[in-house]
Length: 149
Image (tube, rainbow, N blue to C red; front, side, top):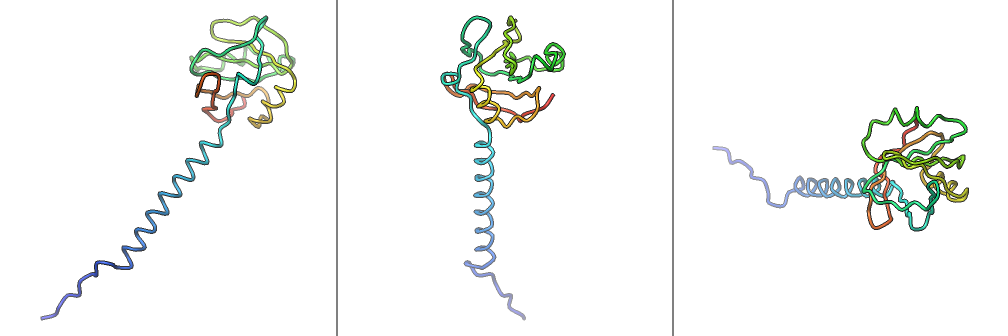
């Protein structure tokens, strides 16, 4: 009769499996932490945007931000292609002021703020769009990738 050799309680296989499991959990945490930090914030308290006659203060929980040039693009054609039901913040880098509607809020701002916005969100082509969601009072966080229309 042959005796079966039993597995030891503290086996090297268990040690490597535990280490590998901890490594996977740490990697997932680091990846999702990196992805969260990758998205940028807009603080409407620090960056001033203008509507037709007054300063823009956000009230909705989320917006679609469209950055375009009224000198180059027909904003009405661009807006027809956006199927999202969320209000749209249309920021004109050419700085023309249009009358806002129920669905679209046309914004302009100073050149320094436009440059900071373009740099922060790494916008290389216009028209571009992305979603933002409210985090705190006047602070919004990017909630989607930047898409070129």
